[in-house]
Amino acid sequence: MALDLQVNGERRRLDPAPTPSTLVLVIEALAYNPQLVVAEHNGVIVPRTQWANTEVSEGDNLEIVTIVGGGS
Image (cartoon, rainbow, N blue to C red; front, side, top):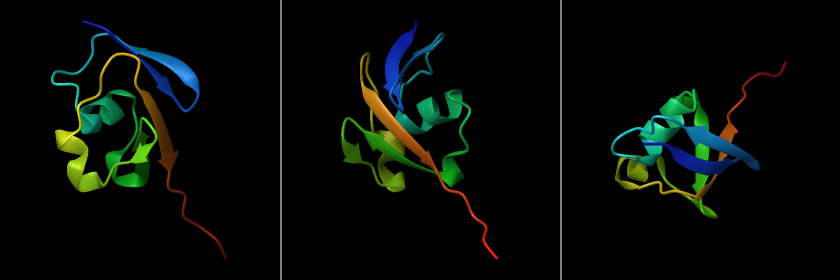
């Protein structure tokens, strides 16, 4: 079964969708490293401790921000 989402303002389709479609599994299916991102689900920043309990549904909006280190 496929899952259509808005991810960072772009339409994305996961086919097949992870089962269950929890935020952590969706982030991994989108090829992000869960340890290096911050996630917003339908306008709410979700604490990493809640990712495994946050269900992602058809048409949901995700904003995924990658943490970038560096500097001099």
